[in-house]
Image 1 (cartoon, rainbow, N blue to C red):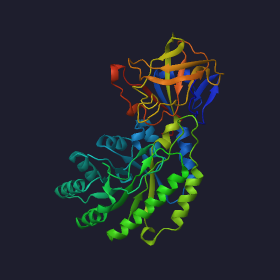
Image 2: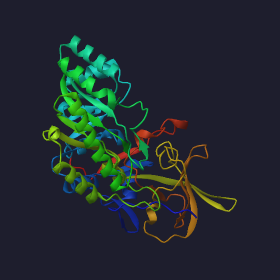
Image 3: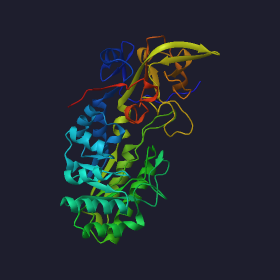
Image 4: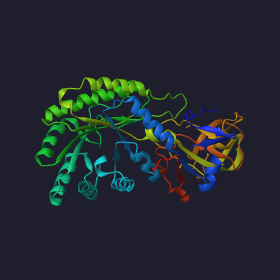
Length: 411
């Protein structure tokens, strides 16, 4: 028997059934069918409030919308955060449709096409430049358009986030401009008449180690100060990146947000003079929305093979690639999951929850302890609010997308 990940707080049972935002799972799927993702807007609002309370007041909070671009969720988030960080022209269009003003949008990501750069320049979005060549292209397009572009530099730092699930900085990377080349590029951007917007420094993601995040933020602030001094120009803004993780697996302990906030507050209290007027922000995706989402699927078949129980659902990795263990994990471990229609009931058997795809990779829970479930019961996979519907191979085998629903929304 393999342990299951920890179910996030904020979920309860009503009449022995999982409730999301105060509504029973069976009532939700009666409206939209299965499989489906359900996102609780109240949990997202509470997470933003907790961040505001724990982190320094001067720190801006941005949403990295690649985590979840579901339009109703974007509209909800637009009223909660200070900015949106996007990574494509498509995301720019979605952010605009959600009512996010261009001045609150920053655009990072390698491989921006000329059409992407042009749209950002015309609309007044801040471009986080990923290379000197991208800077040349942006400046040439801006000159042709007769516009002064808003340009920042994404810096590839000389360090990474220790213990991070995905390292975004340090060493050779397709992301950002190597730190040594940044000062000259800053001077070039300013000399060309662009509106200089500052640095974006993102070293890694998904860590639960508060000390590692504090060390990264301290190193990021020190690097920003050094590069600003070497550039000979004031630094208007600095995006410190993210890195805040959520517990997915057995044994994971939630991030100590208070420790992160205290350490960053101490850093802000001792800023070097060159950064005293700099606006700081962080960008978070999964930490804002990941634990607020649940993936629901219906059991279509209960079968036994060589003494093992398989609960075969109408969902699978085509919607929840990460939960299947095929999205960057080296050793497969179980996400938090449950029988939604018997939520809180005592385990009775060992069973695996699998999907409807013709591949052995399609496994949502491997030999977990569950109450006995039958055809028609609903299963729930938690921590499904980030990198689920939009980060999974939805077209694989033609089963189609899952429904999505936002409950407890303010907009």
